[in-house]
Length: 478
DNA sequence: ATGTCC
Image (cartoon, rainbow, N blue to C red; front, top):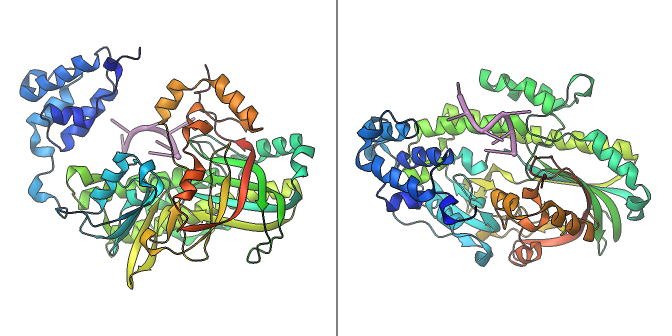
């Protein structure tokens, strides 16, 4: 089962066959995703045949779209119609380079060649994404890249530190579990209905009336208000340890029960991201390698609309966290000593070297001087409450977590549920839901990641997860 | 990330 013949085909395999670096690659790889019956070697032979004589495949069940692509080259973007990239990428600072995969570097280099790019930086948890790498920070001049923000617009962390001692966790274990079950909702497409729908002033925001596209998303946004979604999103109880008094937060030294949430703008943000990246690709034709970095002029109508929709998605994501925290705080009957929240998929107007720029942070934590942020580790490793140091070379940013060590598919194939359960048990972690692809061992060592960003943030307090709820994803069956 | 291709 595990021989080389079953390995996926990538763009480089096709380029080696003589395939052009244009949309043809995308069409060819999409066909390979549905590969049935053929081994990798056989498939590559087919690809070579289609390249040399596409007419023979125009009625082929599998290869028709590819053959059509070759024959009907008219649909492909002509080189003279594309916006040229600069020949050399601008320099960018990289933190923890030894821990970053090549694909993320390559993507960042392409972003640094865009004509709109002013500056960039790569955070130590960086990995390959769609367009801009996750962990990539990019400052541009009056232009916004929808996929420089990411699909989950406004995705963020929110932390409530309670006036409850660490002992509350063991003493009220069953009750805490019940609170998580009753007040959170996970899973793609899932939300709240009827009497369970949440209320929040965000639903009265005039930005929902911007245009008919955004207006049409309002009902679904309302039903998903206060839900968490899937993937790496979570709602968890843990212990927050302050080794010394924090005057700014007004928290005395000690260990407290805390609630940490990670989620974004759900279907609303995803639909906005998809819609506006399509519009961007229509008006901003970039060479194949850069096509997912298509941007909108901030002064254009589409650019203005995206900016409004992005900000609404950010406020909506914030409202979702607020609903979750309010429900759980009420159920606990506790007092909140301090609340901290930060986005890590967003774009801001900021000043860089005395110039107004648009700073895209795609999986990066804002870390201007004195700004608080939360950088989670994994279920079995601590997360950190941090205070930004305002490092301009990092464009006032830091990592948004530990970063993945293992791909989702690799995790599902190679990890056994028994092993994961034992591992969680050894660390005293209670996990409700969660798939193999989110097991703690798929993440990098957070301590190494923090070491690589000592110039970017100071650690204020440490959060140790205890009880975690995530989406079920069907990958748990052994 | 998202009911994962309009």
